[in-house]
Figure 1 (cartoon, rainbow, N blue to C red):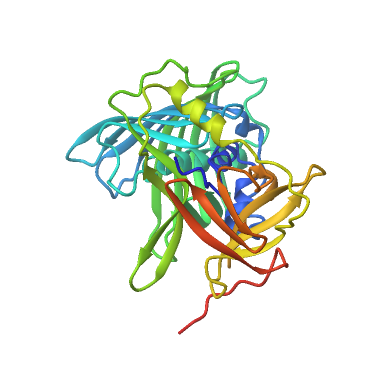
Figure 2 (spheres, helix red, strand yellow):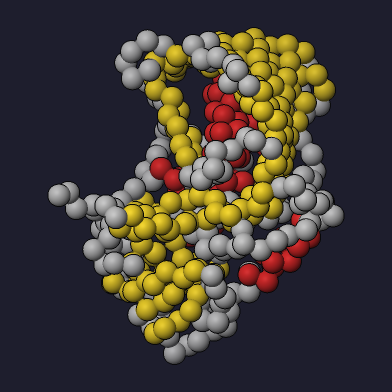
Length: 364
């Protein structure tokens, strides 16, 4: 399992809840990201998406659990020629499980990004058009809201999107019972200054106290992937880091096995007062990206945050570690670490004691 998830899928859960991820993912995003609204508290959804200029439609229904960092989604994908069915599970924010032909090989994380991004967009539209939410109302309410100045930015750790202003959302919501809302929305927006593009969203929102995946759920027939910052070497670009999914080498029979492995990997190590790892670490000190390692709290633990020219993740969302004797790290010296799991470790060297150096790509 690649547990070196600098931005763990906990950020993805937060993105579903529309909280800290937006600032972490898009840096200095201000008004386009906006703040969470009352619509952010829903954690069960149905969502179908159609674009008039494209054939077919996509449908998902799912639920997510902020306490366990679990996500469960059922997918029906129609490209106008073939209808594909499948299921998606994210376990404990670390392991992605897929069943059915719904993902392209090498791009498995996209199967999760798509419903999460569209869900974010729907929640943002409802938050703008009906800021007070559905509390205390029953029945149908019409929606016609326009924003001529501010676009909509939304993201996961591995993907993002932007709706350009001016945009307009029309349609209606139907509150059928307490905390159950059906919606039918059409979003029209500019397309890079060209002709408008439409999205048609139909679905339902509700809440459940717990969406934790049952530990006894079998993983027979599922493809399992570790999720996090992965590295790959290329001849032209050197080592490339991106947030993606990599096939698991371990075999898991059921969800309980995954949780056991995650728990073992969460061991934070032990305090070593003789060493101070604070600083900015890179595989190559000429890189425009790397790891910001900073003290966190009073116990002697650190946060390890991936940073690039676009900014850093939120340290408060990162895993807390002593680094020394943490299974994710091999301490070579106070200025050299091997980072990753036992199957594959990347070498990082401390390039500066400054945890926020200026990062710029060099143009050739």
